[in-house]
Length: 270
Length: 294
Image (cartoon, rainbow over all chains, first blue to last red; front, side):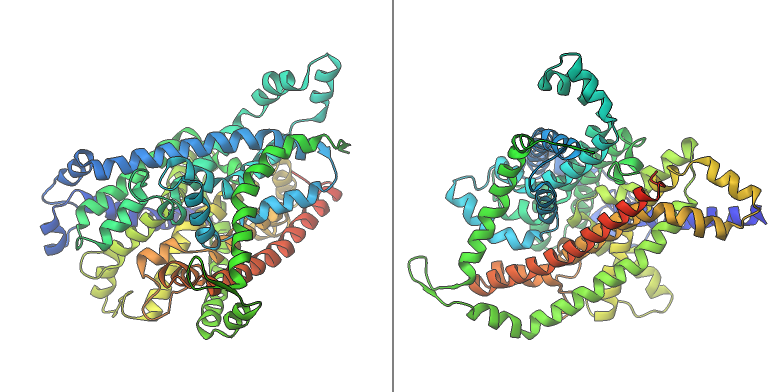
């Protein structure tokens, strides 16, 4: 009885994993086929194996600069988000002050605002400031949803650290900055890692704002891809190869945080 | 209890400045647009609540709103149970656990437009595995021609994309249940179902609230994936709120109505998140009061 149930569960898991992996496999498969093979024959693996599409991407600046641009604004965004969220999360987890609950809720509403709502004003705001088509513009715009999320996750992790540690440190004569940097931050290392991962993830996958705020110099890879789709017919092979390459950074990051990922997704709340 | 300390405001000041720059300033611009008719940059007329009235009467908008609500509810009905089931069947330790976690999580790290691209390829009847298989089975499938097919494809794509989030949340919740609970249950001779109903499910309540909240909000804002996959079509079958708003604001450049629409959209979300947030807080305190907080 128990054995049969175990098998049923495993079967379900395997079915789901197949469901999860097949669409991605199909794209990888396609990225190694020639365009004629894609359109003429239907095969489960590349018969006429080619890396031509990848070569196109790595040698054409309009393609590979997209990846570099994305990396730059994601990194800027991650650093700013963490720097401003760390002290704020500490304040929310340790102190009560006038309006704390309201501010926390207000922060969360920003995470829940449809980016489409802010599209137009962002465009105007950054044009006025002369920041259009710069990496910093996209990084700042992405703060809208990443800062609230970072505060939320970090607050969860910080609340798990006993308050007695703070008190003991202050009695021992530590100043706040010294305590925060040398004792507290090492204690929530994994929380910071998880937060960085989420900031990376949400900034990396966002398209709407990144596409609206850039045109040439800071154009992210996600925008390069959509524009190619609409423009020159359909170069399925290059499109698939570009898609595969956008998954690679995520896959690498996931591998590093795999031990914390489940806890991280629970926002430090279990 | 937390100490009362008003100086804590200094610590959250940087966050306020950052978010105010990217939220309050733009929001004021939207308010400004929503009450004016902008004929040219120099000529603008104050029109009061005219745009709001027009937007409320807009049939296309109401259509998009109902489609959106239907879509978000379907998403929750499929993804939450499937996510729980998946979390229950994931291995707890060893290399299998790591491998399964990585495979399950990978769809969350794919840029949203690439998710659209993947399914665009996957669903085509000439070159895609899913489309070709369905066609081979004799099903007349086309996500660009048939609205029901398009809607279902967007739903399956969302399930594929986001069920892992629910599963990972529940998985973390399950790992936090102490072994003692299971031992007590096995001494009592509890069935698997009883263990799930009376131990696992109550312990998952906290993470499930987060999951429902996140999934509801994010599905309510869905834009990129259907934009790439179906472009909102065929007809209006997969035009959801964000899509409709973007068409109005960027496509037709109707600044006034688009701004009024933005504000209404924002208020709907605000109201729903307020209700859900308070519900979440209540669940949190009830758990702590019961002394069962993991």
